[in-house]
Amino acid sequence: MEKIINLKDLLKHEILDLYSAEEQIIDGLPKMIDKANDPMLKEALSSHLETTREHKERLDIIKHTLIGERDETDDGFFSNLFGGSNSVTCKGTEGLIEEGEKMMGEDMTPEAMDAAIIGAAQKIEHYEIAGYGTARAYALELGMNDLAAQLELTLSEEYEADEILTNLAVGQVNTEAENAEDNDDDEDLDFEEDVPDADTFREESIRTSGL
Ligand SMILES: [Fe+2]
Image 1: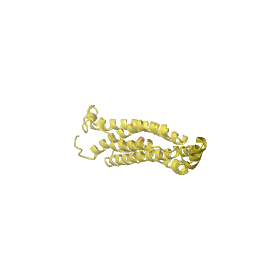
Image 2 (image 1 turned 30 degrees about the horizontal axis):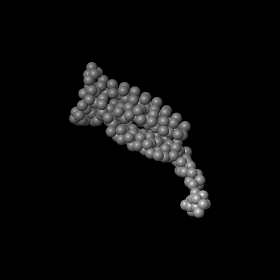
Image 3 (image 1 turned 90 degrees about the horizontal axis):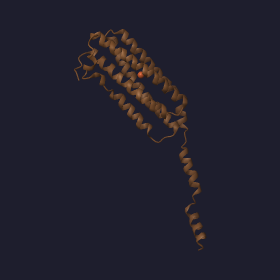
């Protein structure tokens, strides 16, 4: 990795990190949509997937803006930055998505699953909010106001997505999870009711054996 010397280098790194985050979220969201049960949650996540694709495109333009400011003819700039910068992996998002997938692999009621999905999605949202907020602050400090405005636009959409999830959680999903019952256990109980207890079983055995 090349040495990071100044705030502009940090901004470039942050943009690449966010680009990786958006790519991973585009890959990860379909699994969450698939696991979600509440139709409104499915809809909110699906619409955020579309917005995330736009965020990635916006970052593509930002990357080119940064290249242009340095040297428009230097096509290899980003491939040389930070030791092959286009392959920068956002470890934070990677970990959060992995944690979410592990959670979704647990055995839980549909109601608990929806609440867990919102929790996992909001952790990712908050990470993005921190990343875009940091990048915007760097851009403003560097006097790159157009770039800062683009980052601000995405940042506001991340806040919006987070608020939609909060409203869904507080408005219905968490309450449904609070009142959720384990239907699988009910079935087990019904089954157990048909099984004779030990005394009945012994009496029945004695009667049928003729003793
Ligand atoms: Fe995003």
